[in-house]
Length: 465
Image (cartoon, rainbow, N blue to C red):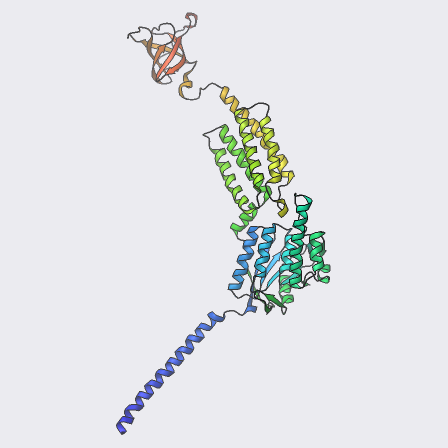
């Protein structure tokens, strides 16, 4: 028994040691996992995106990615520094939907001083969990505009007003102003906006805005109440990159219209002088850039069809040049295409100050191209091929003695020996003859009258026409 006890104690000691080591390992592993599971506290940082441009699909995509990134990083909030004149209704709705679906607070800060949250920007501000404005800023003027009739415009206004009122009611903001800014185009400076509960507060800087927003309780997606904790938070930027800036530049209706007209003009000049390629390449590049713009902007098919008709009329000027009727008809249709190319009800349209001079310039250049084509058709072909030798005077060096004596021979011109065949009088050595055509590699010649015959030039000298 004694030996048994002695043998048992060492075993218990080893087991106890293994249990202690296992416990230490488990604790170390758990502690190692804590930083990755918990990470930075929500109050540690905020993600900030600057939107100082029109609201387009590019901006909607930027905000969507920003909200997702801020959520993945457990940021305390996502901040949109806003300064916009408005933009597309569809893009605005996409941003509003992303804000309403956000699991973290979204703060809209209208800044810097002198900035505005107009039209679509005002609705986005109403949708935010916390709305702040810098001194000297304004908000409102969200009435949709369009070229449609009164009934259609009334439907659009009613729809926009209903959305603005719903968002204001959801966030506890002024429903009266939300309705007035859409139906009557009302706009407010920052002080009145705060006084009338349109926005939450005034902040002169981003740091102050984060401090003012701190401590507010907001409702995020899933009906969860969250306390905003942004005071002293570190700021990370998620602004528009180079590629998005290029897309945003192309998302301009005036630029898209210019690119389309330049593409048309380049293709017209390629038709006028085929084979050069410069005009065609430039036109193709402009067309590709224009397609990027059309993919971003709301396009009406009627405008695209009118643009195609205008291009066809300009092309007709090349094949039937006259007094410029086709060209100026194309200019008129080009202006019409500018009016119908984009959905003006969504705040996108081509400025007539751009469309009118562009159409006139394209029409004039089409007339010039038509004149060049007509001139090239009337001009004799003398640059290359058989036409290079037409009307040249050559000297017959020797005459063949075949079945038709005096009808064939040879001449040396342009540094090469050529066979010649007379279409008129017989040939003799030293006869001067005018080239009137070609048959394969044989020059067809017609002997000059006797009074125009002259001593031949030295051998090897180029014959003159």
